[in-house]
Length: 81
Image 1 (spheres, rainbow, N blue to C red):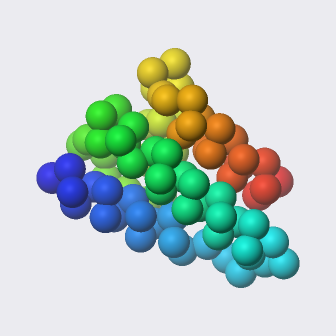
Image 2: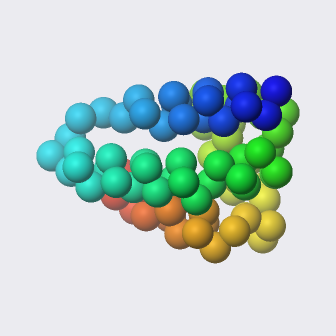
């Protein structure tokens, strides 16, 4: 189940609209995959990816999230604004 969640999480993050900041967003998404993989496995193991469910789960668990994941998620959110 955990491997499935990570794979699905990675696929969800890979589907990002192509904007002018595509290379920056690609780097931020890669950072999210790198830094949040363990957090998703640990904090949100039964959450089905899609519809913002993983992001919401991580946001609810932000006090338990690793610093690297929190920073990667914050950078991605800022670039989408």
